[in-house]
Image 1 (cartoon, rainbow, N blue to C red):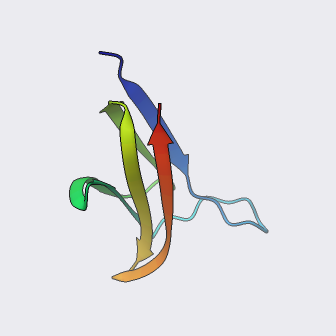
Image 2 (image 1 turned 180 degrees about the vertical axis):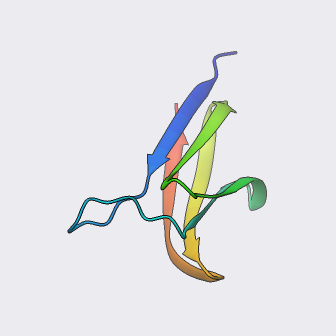
Length: 72
């Protein structure tokens, strides 16, 4: 079975500088798989298999957005 790595870089849209106070959470079927506090403005999810995932970006317990992705 093939595995996939997803790297997420969190940058300010104006300054293009990394945003360092965000949390990125990866879920599948409503179950949290991994969660990272992006200290360097980036997070990496490695070893993912095919399927549907949701990636939530939050700051201090407040959701900023959810990215839904499907790996085929």
